[in-house]
Length: 449
Image (cartoon, rainbow, N blue to C red; front, side, top):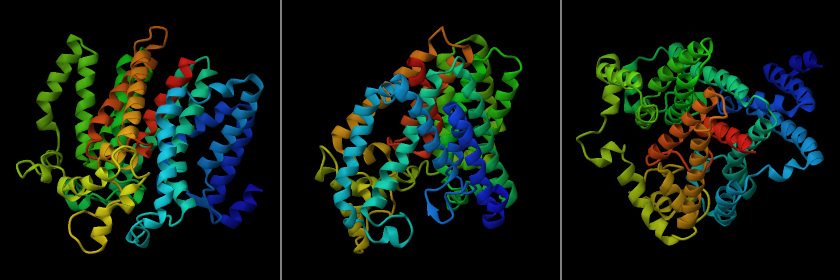
């Protein structure tokens, strides 16, 4: 059957058949599906991964595995009653409820979306079902992934084993960027230029998104490698760490560079020892000599030219023009993705200069204010604080394996870095770049059970 399908539909059929084989094993144990998802979910945004098969949008291996894993878990959970604990209450009330309420509010404004966004392919929907699909359901698949990881971890004797597929995934994600840059033959100076910010976009993610993804992966690997007591495992973790650092550097994302430095500072603060401090001092001293000149120039882009230049035009081109839209509904916001129908965007379409054409405000906190108001921003921030505290608590739990404690400490550092650099981009809602943090949060909930 697989051979016949491949003859008709080529490589896509091969991927689909492999997913169906995986589904057969998932029926035996849903944790098999979780392991496959840990490997595949970070790759699912890549252009190398099929997003639609046989002309059916949404039919792809990850969605098929998610559905099969959820179904296999549900069959077991209905028998033992564990379905009642599937969604933790803080996640439900502080995070999911504001997102769903904002999506319901945004449904009223779908017809008000500035026509240029769908016309130029900046968004892939023009009606209410498409809006819910892209703005709510797709992001929440990342939350579902984390909950399935938690359900699997709660039933596992050694939850640290889930770190193995995570490392496999990180290797593939790092190799994609390195391989793409080598194949294209791009030099560091060209990649560092402001006109090359979309160079990595053919991979399916913007360079800034990839940079933030690598920051969280770096944090997890750094703390895990430092805490691991297995002599055979540590060299592999360090090799993966080097790969991630190289890939992060090639994104030339200033936000990612800042997050990278913040993670290293937290590493020095949280793992205080003479050896660590000496190594940190040596690396800080040698960094100007070791780091390529193109990276240093990218880090210093806009310095001395004013705050708007440092922000790459975000202050005058996005943040200030959007403030009147925040004041229109400051308590509960205007709905998910409200920048698409904001007054500033309608003025721009009418020819009034002011705002840059963009589908998000490039500031996670401003986005939350626009979409969910002060109430939604407070609830989302409260949930992220709850997640950070939970990760920190597990990092100090002496009953866990040292590598797992290091993993949770790295997740807390990565989360802190993400929330810091979110001032200039990203989102407090689920994003593909947060996948490794959601993996850690899923493990956190599973172990707390």
